[in-house]
Image (cartoon, rainbow, N blue to C red; front, side, top):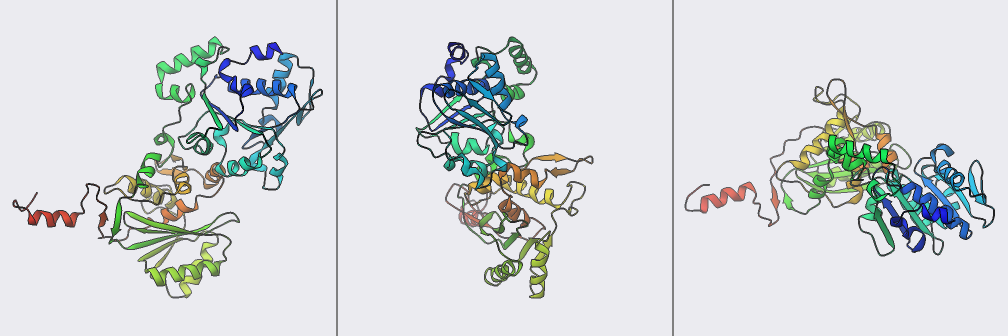
Amino acid sequence: MKKVIAKIPEIFAPLMTQKYRIKLCYGGRAGGKSYAFADSLLLLGRQKKLLIACLREIQDSIKDSVHKLLSDRISFYGLSDYRVAEDRIDNRLTGTRFIFKGLREQDSQKIKSLEGVDIAWIEEAQTISKKSWEILEPTIRKDGSEIWISMNRLFENDPIWTAVAANPDRRTWIRRVNYCDNPFCPEEMRLLAEKCRRENMEKYRHVWLGAPLAQGAERLIGAAAVRQAFTPKIASTTSPLIVGLDIARFGDDKTVFCFRKGRLVMGFESYAGKSNVEVANIATNIIGEKRPVRLFMDIGGQGAGVYDILKDRGVGEVIRGVYFGEKALQADRYFNRRAEMWDKINRWLTELPLPELPADEDLFDELTAVNKKFDGRGRLQLEDKEDIKKRLGRSPDKADALALTFAEPVYDYGVPRLYGNGKVPVEEMFALAKKSSGGGW
């Protein structure tokens, strides 16, 4: 047992010696996080009976889990009291059991099998979706239970980082650990880290120091621009109302209406489990009451049926159907309409006067989740929507509804009236100029 203790660096001591609800270690390559977690859990499992769940977002087979790491550490230390089976690891003396699961495969019923867990270890937690975390956290409910998290940060808004580390409470222990903190880091790894530092500092910071990637490199929309748009700045606007309607395609998707007037997004309305007729009824009421100049709607999948109903009701001058996958209006720049509309959001967020969005964390996650790439002709292309759903744990319905408001140009002579923050609308600048002695600027 002393041999096991000697192999756990002092920086990881709180894993075994202190009680916290959540213990999170993050950092770069060769920090020893996984080894320290495995060794600590094996040691604790020899002291008393524990049920330890080793979790990942996706586990297609036991090979994807930390089963092999634990098995190798058992062999390394010669822990003969552990019995390694194909899908679990048991301690013959204390009754401790390690189980291995992928969270993506656990629905709300299956995940209840984790209610009796003493310690849940989430490995590679940067890949955990917001949905998976929201299901898991309240499920680990046994008195004194703990959630251990090991991760190499990917982006600034990794869901589990946002949920746990952005605003930690007193029951959360967080520690950054890098190769330079690991006394057992092989010399070869230190040399590789130094080589990377000399050649590419940005890569070194991400790979070896655990800093999140700059979103501008891969993500279409940066977090800073969205956060800036959440700041209230527009009191009212004379711009015409444009509505974007993203219609649910699958059971867990939502139908979302987005209401935008020029630089101001007024808000969203979301609906679940609505039939085509029910969605058409809501759209009809919106057109009648709010009088939008355009309602752009997704007509892929179920949307075509809603579109036909609305056309029959005589609102064809207001509605416009859009296929996300159809040819872009600027086909030389964009792979399809989806890329074109999303890029218009990206540009809209940084143009002056700065726009305003409702402060909505789900919207933030959706807008900043999309990776960009370029096709063989150099046109902007977005990653597949299914990949985004896997990462978010849901479809980016609000963001798609906002994107639809940029489907086609709409004449807009409106002017936003800004709050008293040092910015003055154009008409007031002219009025001020007329009153001043100089008569101009």
